[in-house]
Image (cartoon, rainbow over the protein chains, first blue to last red):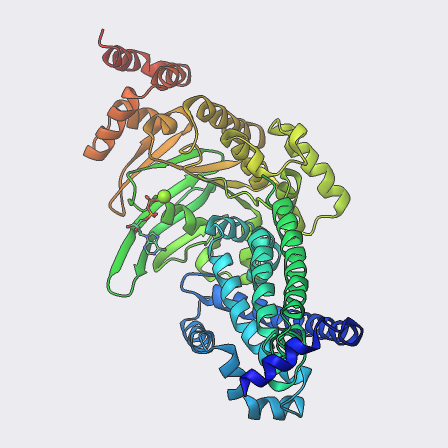
Length: 232
Length: 284
Ligand SMILES: Nc1ncnc2c1ncn2[C@@H]1O[C@H](COP(=O)(O)OP(=O)(O)O)[C@@H](O)[C@H]1O
Ligand SMILES: [Mg+2]
């Protein structure tokens, strides 16, 4: 059976770019859409969850053991689930929220959940690394807890936070490559359908090259801003 | 009864930290008066409870029991907005400066003014005035990581003074500085006390620092107040063993000459005793 495919593929010769280019454009758009939606929604939810995780820790601004333990547990449970399994496991929830379990939006939904959870941990860890003395200084001036969180703490941790988000960006791009599993499209789907299955490695490499350029661009941008914000 | 000029009044102030397994008695029934306009020193070894005691004054730590009156208010009974108002009257300076690294020097100093809702024009004028007072006008737009320790502490002091507080709390503010810079910062604090009449409560584990700047000294050991007196009394006639050891370390320190001569100026009546100490230090 396989032999048959190989023979057929090599027989077709060079790649038909005239046919593939519109499909590639569409795949790039789908990847950008999935990544932007996921980072946009999941990144914000994750930031808020991360702030809750950080500030409810013992001896922090809004110390609350119950909230911390529950959220910490939820994050620990969801985070290690491989995305491909999570994607299929929450199918009923995806249907009830998005209305369907196939297509790009159906892929974005589980991506947002995983991204929120991962972001919350990254945010929490970066905030834990900030000097508690800075919070103490703000509090000693009569700065309210909320104001301390948003006008002192976040600006102080902004540089590592930006790098954390760049890291997430790579993880989300990675997740988006699995969207093809549920007909979500994107570059991963493109590489599998027209590269791997057609035994046309060039197509796969083109898809990879686009992803590398895309990720590098974001990483370099993040490095630039993170460095500027360090003031050292 | 404390007199009218008492600005901070500890009455049996106690703090117990409840940890998972055990309880830590950090401050044990502290009773103490700080008078308006003085430089009040608290000395003691690490873990004696000094930081906990000073942090009670601006309620960074709540009391477990006892009473603490600051500027006429029972601090244990204040709600969030009253506490905010009280904190605007109390500046605080820290050992490791605690400057906001993401904000420029000017923005650091401006921050408490924003909290106190000063108008932008008034804030700008006040920041310029403070930068000038601490001799840092040329560094207004620089970020804290670019400054030396002494410069950071000057900014810390300027920031703590921004809202014209009546009290300045200083927790080991010279411990991270070299001897020369220590003297600079202590002189700045003296100037703050003399020129603005700000009452200063300062913690140190260096007796020479305390004797250089403090009018009164309280010695804490193992959560308790063990000795209290004027700087001259403590320095020349220490009673408690902890105090005795502190005085000894002070005279052995490398900045002690400067401090001894300063003591002579401030307490001419004690000149003979101080002279003896000086001789003892130099083995003559
Ligand atoms: N937040 C805290 N939780 C538990 N124990 C504390 C806390 N802060 C201080 N302590 C304990 O209280 C005691 C006094 O500490 P502290 O006031 O910092 O002393 P000092 O400033 O004199 O070194 C120490 O035994 C210290 O370990
Ligand atoms: Mg301390």
